[in-house]
Image (cartoon, rainbow, N blue to C red):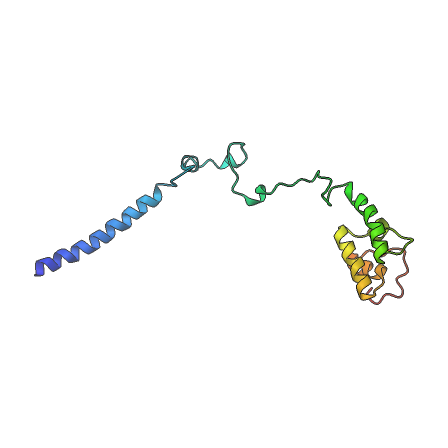
Length: 149
């Protein structure tokens, strides 16, 4: 009886040690599966090559800055402002004697200007006051009646 207890007491730690060392060896072998040989060679320069695939998700999104539909392309902001002027005047956001190009000149992004136009119309604020407050650019317009500046 004592002998069988001794065998069990030695056998359990031995099996445990064997499984631990075996797991470390399996983990040290490297990746397995499709593309394992490329990953095992440590080819980190493959993301720039045509044959490799980048794992960076930012590179998955195609950026087409030359597109005519893109509002960020160089020549399209003035075209967009020309198209928006009659629409904004019809909605009462712009006075009839002004245009979107002049109104949005102090804004970096066109969507910020449109948001300010809508906010000034909806809240009953003077657009020049709101524009000066948002952009920090004070134009030659009369800002003496502005509470925000």
